[in-house]
Length: 100
Ligand code: SF4
Image (cartoon, rainbow, N blue to C red):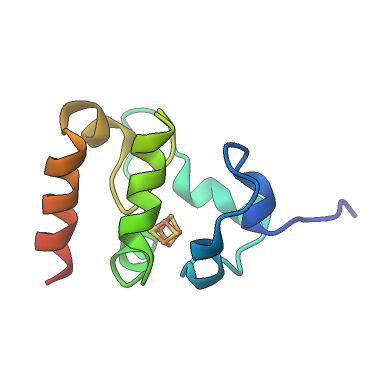
């Protein structure tokens, strides 16, 4: 059986991300992270949307995606397609509306 690693070992852009300790997805193993990476044109699962919506570090996760120009994956509860068309500020406003 292949060993699995926690999420914080997956994110390659910054070796230490203190906010990951509080991530709602932080206990997932690598093979579950496919939940956040679906093929273009496919919809992310409702359970994944709900996980991000309640995540206490949603803003930090979204900021990370914008700061590092990550073009795939569902970060901060915002799809890569939405991140392409929204500025960082617009995406922040969107998740703030969505979290209320
Ligand atoms: S917002 Fe979603 S992808 Fe980001 S850390 Fe939270 S649960 Fe994980």
